[in-house]
Image (cartoon, rainbow, N blue to C red; front, side, top):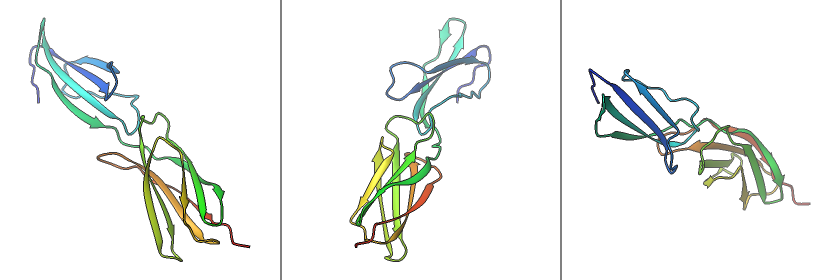
Length: 159
């Protein structure tokens, strides 16, 4: 908590892993809002108190933006023992976003999940033929998760 009665604050926003600042703001307010950020991204916020030509030591913290959900979950392909699901990532999603994918069959009392990064499809293998499955996908960060995108699919029957 920095107080500064005669000057202003300089706040710098940097996407973790990026060599340059994305935004810099000067203000006398103690609350600053940055807009246009990537979803599910890790940012460093650094604040300085500035008075004339004097600048305080920096105070920094890491903040994760809230993840927006993927959309348009759908079956891409099926076989007798696998289903490939696909989804649309949210706009302006961070690099290295982590998805948690789930598949469930109530009939077989089967539930499996996995984590995937930087892809918008996943193949579940080792499934039972001729079975209905529910699929869901969401984005996860170190501190939060998005809403789910969901769909259903059916493995091909053995003929």
